[in-house]
Length: 262
Ligand code: COA
Image 1: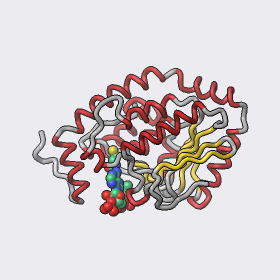
Image 2: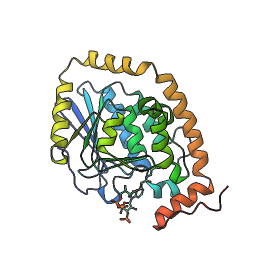
Image 3: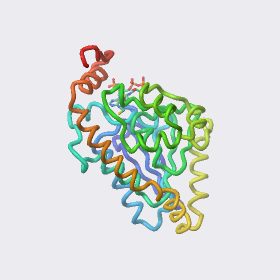
Image 4: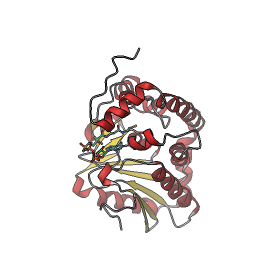
């Protein structure tokens, strides 16, 4: 069963009735994702793809937080080194998965916590869900092909607002923008998500996979190319003083000051 506790197993998996639940569970750090967690997420997706018992993947966080995105401490101490880094391997795995992925979001979904949703097939949100893309605020650029997928989904101006201002939006706004399929009260969210996942898991699996593949095939090449380009730029920016100032400020609990940069 899904646990919402403070255990030391940050990625939890559980297979039941054809639904593989993949839980991000590191509540003390708002489910911030470390390299190890990306590796475990990737392994869970890859194993699910090979396992005929798995019909649907259900990706969730804890009750009041999806994920605060990349662990900024891990970023500072152990920055990703290239395309084979765990974060990029994870993004490729989620973007290429053949089986449907349902994301269940309540509380913050920051950075990759929002961009990964662009690769999911259904996004169910709790009323307290908050979506935020603070890459610019961190001296970084979009990743996960979000610079391509987001304007396609929400239009250029809305995408610019989300990516340039980096302010959080609530579940209703995300639903209006098409980032979210359905909103439920937080108390019903997991129950409804599991019900929907089980319904999908009972459908003819080849037809489900083929439909997913048809829905995605038109943009697959572009997604892969943009993701790779963004990754390269992201890694360059991560080394620059702007990102170091932003990440240092977060870790030191002070406002960032970009006034010296040109
Ligand atoms: N990386 C590392 N640690 C993080 C983190 C992250 N992305 N997000 C939260 N944490 C840590 C905090 O430093 C804090 O640790 P501490 O208790 O040791 O001081 C703990 O998690 C709780 O976070 P806090 O900020 O107190 O919770 P909150 O409920 O007030 O705010 C967020 C939650 C998610 C809105 C806020 O933590 C946040 O904005 N985090 C950074 C998000 C971000 O920029 N992610 C990177 C995107 S690329």
